[in-house]
Image (tube, rainbow, N blue to C red; front, side, top):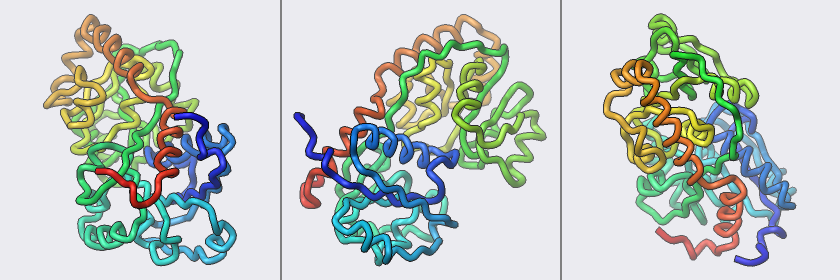
Length: 308
């Protein structure tokens, strides 16, 4: 399209907690905010402390202050805030609440009935809804990082929790970057994995550079931002066979991550082939600039123009 009318937009992004929190949703919001601001779009980020999705906040002052702006609200806190938001609010929907809180499904569905527009961050999140939605998948930052893999070092990125199933491949040589608390994280540590905790961008870049292999064993992912970061860096990847994995990295999809990891570590030629396949797959992924353009295109549409 030509010159974007979106450059004249003033956006309010309502986010659960700090934008620099080490999570996929936070990174999605932060990179969109940074990219939009770099393009001259006024973006006001409201970072609301939780705990969400059951948190509380008073938005009367902010609603008056930002009257006339376009509002985007993180789906994690939208149900709790829906009564206070402008009727034209757009919801950024990452993952249905029922995957973590099954008892909140009907509450979330009732809130989404009132949304003027829904933007899902993957086709699979959109397909999970029984209503029309737009899709704006995460972007990527192109990387020229030189890999310096440490032999046998396996990297997992994300909250250490049962849904991500890091325990299945935890062993000596495995490093797990992400929030790690409770008995499940302790079990991963007892199995030999090194728990790095949440890492900043520079430290996480170093871990990708040093990884001999990236592993993902999640039982469900609607996209996989950490997986994408591994792909654009040319890191060999192995991941549980899920629809998003087959779309992003079909070469990496396996039924049994735990059994595949040691076989790959013992096969340098196979790792080299996977690294080439990762780099090729990463080159096909959209950039944050492209996805910011896509979001602006969606926001310039009226609430009645949503398409399934």
